[in-house]
Image (cartoon, rainbow, N blue to C red; front, side):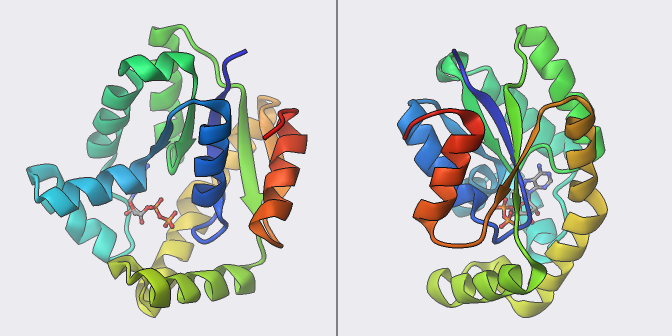
Length: 191
Ligand code: ADP
């Protein structure tokens, strides 16, 4: 059965890492809006130039931009097999837009996986990643702002999916392998 998954969780919770592993194991595309936006920025496209100001400040890129990007990506041939959305939806209005896109495509979500991690571990991981990857939005001020945006705008999404019976919470502490094992258990898949 096709897996159509949404990954939720704070920046630094490891959802990107798990999303990549899971996508490879299930042979379905991983659709990361953060990665798509960084790709546009690297190419210096108009969309990338617009996104850069928001991302550098830890703010969300305007919904219209991200919605159009996801609509486009879900329309590609490989998404028919299933998909893992990482970083989208990121606020409650985006949930509604995704609902509409899926309706039009005749698809239903399989689950929303929420990666939970204590705030001190989140900050620790992001600070470490900043040193390793040098991402422009991983500076201390911007990390703080991204976490604030996460609590205010993204966290409420979990409730929406919980009420639909789609939410599965995964403890994101521990090693990558530990978390992968929990993800597989939650989804009933083998990796
Ligand atoms: P992280 O989850 O580690 O913060 P991402 O790579 O998912 O990093 O996202 C980086 C940035 O890209 C976000 O801070 C935000 O500015 C932008 N972004 C990604 N997805 C969305 C989205 N669905 N809506 C608005 N902005 C987004």
